[in-house]
Amino acid sequence: MGQSSSTTSYPTSQFLISPEPSDSTDGIKIGPLRDYTEGIPDECLACIFQLLNAGDRKRSSHVCKRWFRVDGQSRRRLSLNAQSEIISHVPSIFTRFDSVAKLSLRCDRRSLSINDDALLMISIRCEGLTRLKLRGCREVTEVGMDNFAKNCKNLTKFSCGSCNFGAIGINMLLKHCIKLEELTIKRLRNVNNGNDVVVPGGAALSLKSICLKELGYGQSFEPLVVECKMLKTLKVIRCAGDWDNVLVKMGSGNTFLSDVHLERLQVSDIGLGAISKCVNIDSLHIVKNPECTNLGLVSVAENCKKLRKLHIDGWKINRIGDEGLMAISKQCPDLQELVLIGVHVTHLSMAAIAANCQRLERLALCGSGAIGDAEIACIAAKCVELKKLCIKGCAISDIAIEALASGCPNLVKVKVKKCKGVRSEAMDWLARRKGSLIVSFDAIESEGLDASGSDVGGQESGVGNSGDGWECSRRRWPFS
Image 1 (cartoon, rainbow, N blue to C red):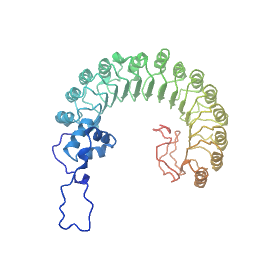
Image 2: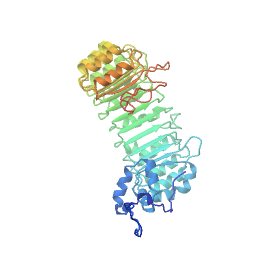
Image 3: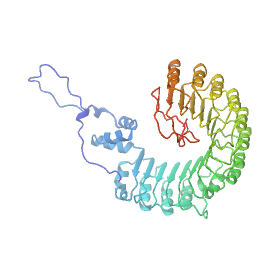
Image 4: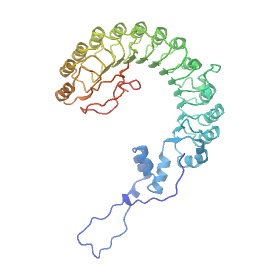
C-alpha cells in the first residue's frame, strides 16, 4: 500500500531539554519548556534527514507537522509497494513527496500490480523524475510506457524486471527519453518470438550502460547494442541465442567500451576476439561460458593492453588456463584485480602474473586444486602491491600462511575459506604477526563446494572479520 499524508500532531517532548534538578525546588515556578529544534532551518533539517536510513527517516517524519512537511519536500528517493490499490493514494503521495527524482515501484508475483492509468498519474506528478525502477509491474503495457516516457523526458536511468510490456514498451521509452544513460532489463516478457526488435531511438547518443539479464530471446536487443556508439558498459547474463554475431558487429565500431560482463552465454572465442577490438576495455568478466578458451583470452590480452580487472569463472572445464593467463601477464602490465574461479592454473602462470603485473592489488583464487603452497609463496614474494587476497577451496596448508607473513608488505586483508590444509592456529598466528592485517578464516568443510568455491554453510572465525561481504561466491564477486 502506498503512503498518504497525515494531519496528526506528534509530541516533541522527547526533544525538549528540562532544567537541571536542584536540591531546593519548593516554591520555584518552572516556565514552559522550550523546543530547541525550532531554531533549526528547514534546509538544515532536510540535510539531517538525508543522513538517516529509511526506517529512521520515516519515524522521524512523524515527530511533528513541521518535520513531516520538511521530509516530504526534501525526499529525493521513494520506494513504493506497487499493488493496484495504490492508485487511489497516488495524488496524496506525490502531493507530499513533490521533489522525488528516484522512484522504485515493486509488486510481488502474487499481487495485482499498478496499471497504465496509475503510471500515467505518477508521470504527471513527477515530471522531474531521473530514475525509475519497475519490478513485477505486470499490468503495465506498451501504452503505459509510451505515456510515461512522454511526460518524464528527463529520465537518465531505467530498470525493469518481470514486466510484460515487451520490446515495444522499451522502444517507446528510448524514443522519448533522449537523456537516458543507463538501461537495465531483466526477465522481460513478450520478447521471446523475436518479431520485434529494440532500437536505441533518441537515446542512441546518450546510452552509456546496458545490462540484459535472463531474456528468452536476447537477439531482439541486437540493434540496441550495436547502434549505441557511446556505450561504455555492457553486461549480458543468461540471455538465450548466439551472441558471437552481436559482439562482432559491435566490436568493429565502438571505441568507448570499457567494461564487459559475459555470463552463461552462447559465446565463443569469436565473440572474445570481437570484444578485443575495443582496445579501451579495462574490465572484463568471463563467467561460465564453456565455449571460451585460451585462444579468446590471448586475443583479448594482445589488444586490450589497458586491462585492469579480469574475472574468470572457468566452471572447472579446463578450457582457460596457463596459456591465456601467461598472455595476460605479458601484455597487460596494469592489471590491478584478478579473480580466478574454477580455473586450472599452475605455478607457471601464477609466477608470470606475480612477476609482470607489479600493480596487482586484489587477487582471488577459488576452487582450484592446482593452487598450492608454492603458488602462494610465489605471490607473497613478488606481489609487493597486493592489498587483498582471497583463497577458497585450494590445496594450501599452513606453509602458505607462513609465506604470507613474510611477504606482501602492503597486504591489508586476507580471506581463507574451505582450505582443508590450513589450521585456525596458523591464521591466528598470522593475525598476531601482522597486527594491522584483517584476517578472515572459515575451516568448516562443505561437501557442497562447487567450481565457484561457494559455500553451502558454515561460520567464519572471529579473527578480524570486517563483515564487508568480501568473498567468493556464485552471486557475488570478492571485490564488488
